[in-house]
Image 1: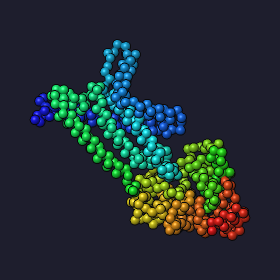
Image 2: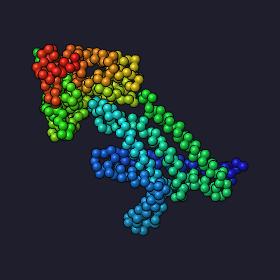
Image 3: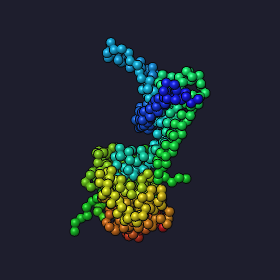
Image 4: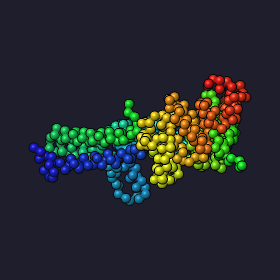
Length: 235
Length: 252
């Protein structure tokens, strides 16, 4: 009965694994993009320059207000369209190109992650003790040194629980890219179900795999939190 | 005998928060080996003045000179911003709440300035940091985090951290006010030894004993101005102003 999971032509094992690889790649590539957007959004909303602040808050409100799948469609179709328009303007006789669903997934998921991460990071910045920064100033550190040596290491303590949640959400949201024809775990599962007519088996397998990834993430996050809290007395 | 050299000079420092003028023109000169105690009731502007000396607070106007570096401030804008970090690295500062970096051990706290700001080799910085922590009596606490230390121990680490920068002068912002009474002594003792070895110090404090016995000069601030200034013995025995007389009778 395990034949359908086997590797090769007879089973679906290799297809599912390939799907899993895409899902993991997507999540891992999205993370730094999302964090970068998150930091930019946090800096913008903490800025003393009012238009920048408005931009930061505006971005957050819009992104939080859209269903993820809609963001994905807008990015996939919109950016694809834009890409082809620019291409035609630059080189009128070029054939239309396809916008990679993987890149669309990274951009869309990164934008969503970034909007929420921006709020988490803004909160974390505001929780930092001002005295820590003053001590850095008083000793003659530059703003850059203060950010890298004092604020950033202390930020994780406040930001990690929130960012951990966002990571797990994003890991599961990667399943959305199956609707724009990226062969991720979700889509390969659906294909397998369609061919074998064994929905229960393959959906259960997908459930177990997603859940295993979440558990693994939780273990890693717990370790990171432990490290971020070094030197802090636990209540 | 040569005249002692001027280490730090503040001229006509004004500071306003919105409409409230907290400092109304304060000038102060610290020469080498001076230990100046700044006294005053809360709201007199003493902490604000101290924080203006290393630009943690930007004065509204005035001039601060440290080690020949001169910063003139007009309309709340320092005229040569680039020198602010230089000035800060030449002045040590102690805070009421110690402000040790919580994510670094005692030793790392002391090494941070020399390594990051002065670009000293790590090994040298470590040797000196160890010696300094030994000097403040914490050789067996070097690898502990601030949260594992008592308030008095934290403040002594903070003193070592300031000394590691080999500052021209050290500013103390109520260094013992946040301490339990039984821990005040150990910090005052270290401060006293610094004074004895000729460090230039400016100390905002409520410790009358320290002001009277250790400092070479006392400055009494009242409502943003210097109300009285002079050698401690003379000031405490013959206060010239009524406000200072009332102040010392209240704190006694």
